[in-house]
Image (cartoon, rainbow, N blue to C red):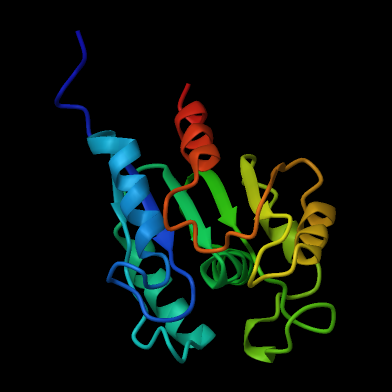
Length: 191
């Protein structure tokens, strides 16, 4: 007999760049799919920064600071595209006092001299040293991602040698129809 009064596991989802909140926009389809596949056992929070079409790190920092204050149990963090890199930046620079069950990063861009040139989003040197307490780190990236080059994944594989890396076939970036590998990994995390 299952305990129906058990609190759902918390997930905070950091969205991609661009418009959000409607079908066909940003991370909407991926979040919608996750909610369907993970059911009521998981409470997925999908907050949106103040101007997702002109994002700044300051907007992300404000959003994460607000959301992390609400966390009362170990949390699962999912980042999609820009949201992935902003999670890494925030976690490594701000060191929030939260317990993280797993960090799941989908199509994560690299910023700076070896990636895309946006100074505001660049990670600090040796940022990964600040994230050693997160033992469950997963990356998902299509070999022919139409937006974020596959070569960006190589940087993260080097920085997180003990992470789980899911190399996916195809060109998908938005994963509007879902990402079964992500769902399976989240479910396996709790076993």
